[in-house]
Image 1 (cartoon, rainbow, N blue to C red):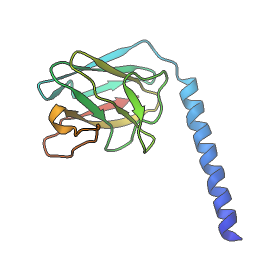
Image 2 (cartoon, rainbow, N blue to C red):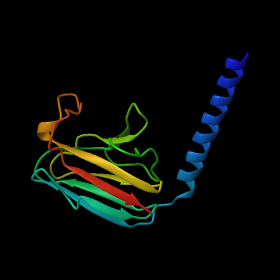
Image 3 (tube, rainbow, N blue to C red):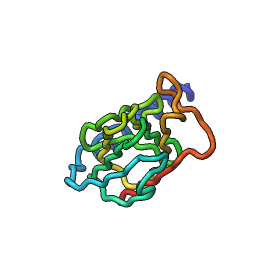
Length: 145
């Protein structure tokens, strides 16, 4: 009986937490402020930025395909508008699809915090979009106030 009660309590807490996150996403409106990050020559410029809740970050792939992957630290799970070229992965966090040269991907940030991400350029992405881990993968950080 204790296990059933504990399971019901855990399910209720999860439902309440999801509801609170959805409410947070709905109350944050896009600010109209954008920050552009350039992905060129295997580098990220600028690698670290600070933004406010509701600001949008745009990643621009210049010379080769790239993928933005929020892997370390706090994953990005909410966006204030429909992201461009980003999707929720199996962990419920945003990851970009392949960004072709000359194209962009964007994400409007809702949650305050520090979000670390890696960029996998053409050579670091296997067929099917799976991330191939390896040393020297460029990394960036977005701090949302």
